[in-house]
Image 1: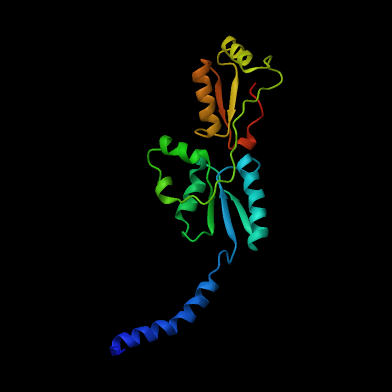
Image 2 (image 1 turned 90 degrees about the horizontal axis):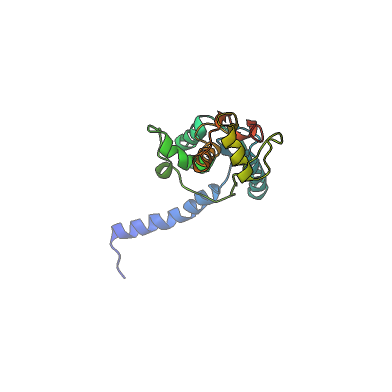
Length: 198
């Protein structure tokens, strides 16, 4: 078979480059350095605890440190923007929460589009929302609590992890469905909110 000179040179150059390319590919195994896992809530809440447990587990298996970086504020938008603005190299990850879906409907001018600017990697946990009531409230069931709240409109506080947080949205839905008037008290994260309403 007679190869034209130019074709022969291309094939030769390609063959010579293959061993060098395989060395480069091996040198770029992931992860080759520290991985940052951004959590958009303060330390101590469910997302933070889950991130620290999964971070330790991943670190042991991958052989690289996984650092949990709590960046709370603006209902998770501060931490989310940090991740969106980071290089898309897999070394800055986001512990995405339901608040990321909620924020798209609450904020008109977010500097990012969560669906477009992020890519899911894994589903880690499902965090249930529960109703806790201060022991001083004379209600042991949800119907008893609704009756008590209706008898005391505007006198019961409802704590949440912040405006627009899943706890806040769920509490507002409960108020609407039950027809009760409670005062929303936002905290800077669920770990800081007191357990139970009073």
